Image (cartoon, rainbow, N blue to C red; front, side, top):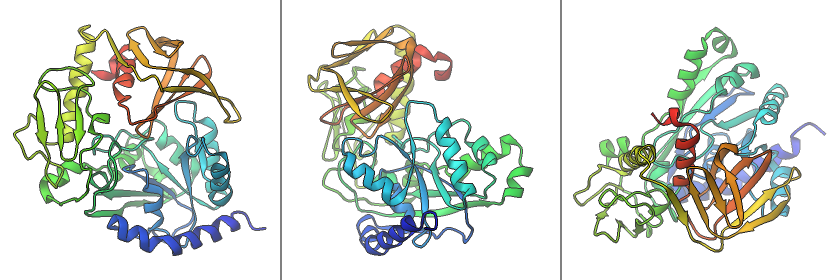
Length: 386
């Protein structure tokens, strides 16, 4: 059988069946990809539905996605079905990506287009995150044409921390097409700039300019997954989001309008500015030793050790705490100096590596794990926070 023939047939069938529903539900328009094959497609990462949305731009041509291997890990049957039907290239977050890079190059050289979300995770505050180091090296090594693609309006439609969809406007469009010869002629700095600028988006800068209205029942629900530092009392973990409001027991409160911008007097013009302030302020508090420990006393947090064959073994259960020296999850202690990476998965999971072992932390409800990653970063990589 022709390689990927099954996947191509399934792809075209799924696109035919579900694209009308997807367009209507998400209010999205997607510009078609150029008629070049194969291409190395790099796109900004805004929502968990981005692979489905990107398929709107290529309904008749299979795209092989680079996907986090934690997807459907808790459902082995669905996971096997996904890999049988669409053959995504798995990437284990919080671990080495060498094998992933090799698979990407092999797939492109076999004649199939590959899509990579180069930030590695969906945006938290509406701004495109930094492109993963080595992406330019991978593009050059692949020898394939590069296409950059950008989604606008996705953050307000389905923010990473949020609950449900907000109906408004969303658009995807091609921002750059570069042949293999053009890529070879570029310097490393130019190629990195091309990739970065091609997927760059600032949701709230756009909202301040366009004021697009978004409608939903749970506009600010679960905002505490994003916002962990109160600007009034400077306590962590006290903010709560509900309906259109974010508030703290100290009396601080801000209401947001249909454009997801503050309608009350607020210290910040938008969520992105608030997040950038809290990140900087929290890092400064850590540097000045004003943060000695952070914790969440949820007894139902589960810590799994992930085996090489992707089976999961329950290693610990209980609350989580972190100080400048160690992270404690239930009965297990991890020295921060031995934790090589912490990756946040969705809004209730985190993955990390420690002493050549790979772990996944799961919460039964949305939980702000960002403050733990930031504390780890400030302690182990202080130069990156300046």
